[in-house]
Image 1 (cartoon, rainbow, N blue to C red):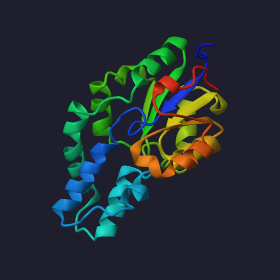
Image 2: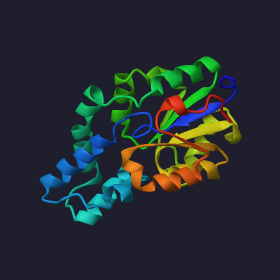
Image 3: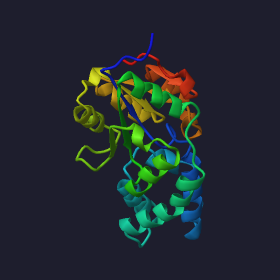
Image 4: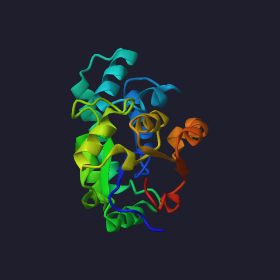
Length: 220
């Protein structure tokens, strides 16, 4: 049976559609190294579900930096931009899966914490930008981050699809939990950045995949 129409799929970008989490490992190393710090073992886990402005505030507090949020955002954007437009690629099978979904009539959305100045160039680089009906960022519509279901419900409303007919693809445990709280199906996507949470992701998600050849051919 093929993918059903009248449905919606909502995708994260970093670590889900894009094989990009290594970019942020390098950004953290460079950014903190310039200031004389090593990257703490728990840093990525602490910030993974935050909006970027909240990550900046947390980083300033944690390392007692005499810099503004906007200073950090500009530097992070500059450090990451080149990688997103030259070296970051799509996860295996992702582009083909998006084409199948579009051909079926399903609505497609991106919900991401990625900086606005990075997400469109990154999607254009991998040839995915025109596949989506909706691209929204956390914190941009008064819905907070992915630690609550609000941003997913907002996306469903904008797509005109009931939450129960939305399937979310995420690599973060906290986002998978929020999607399920929103009444949606949630699939976990394997990524090295969430390896420590993979067992919990497998227990919590409605399904998991190592690449998009394993993605569901029938949406909820």
